[in-house]
Length: 110
Image 1 (tube, rainbow, N blue to C red):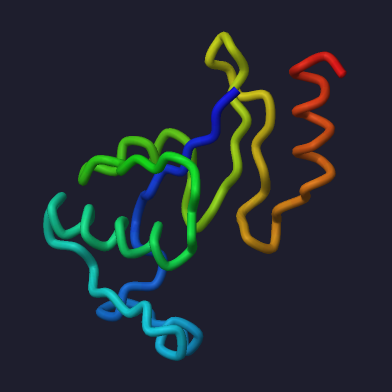
Image 2: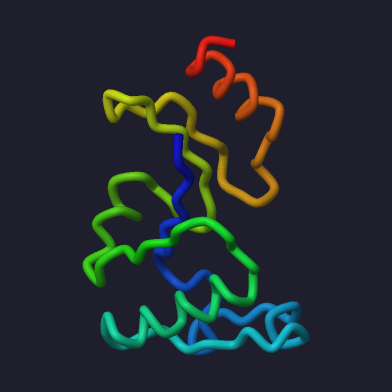
């Protein structure tokens, strides 16, 4: 079993919609103009949030976000056959750790 973070669109870019909490926490970024800029913002996100598991970057065409409706945040559990075993409601307020835990237990047979 492995965990993976997928960085998609910048949720609150300074040139679109900025949250006061981002300003306070000094995580203010404009919408990236290309994949290189997106990679820089994603790296800052991973470091700022202290993400300790592998992270990958959605392409600039947003293929992953479109396929999984990942914006603003989602948690997915994918089974060994590549099927969605669990999909959270939009996060962070839609995250239900007990639902994810139950799905994980079902998936691994415990």
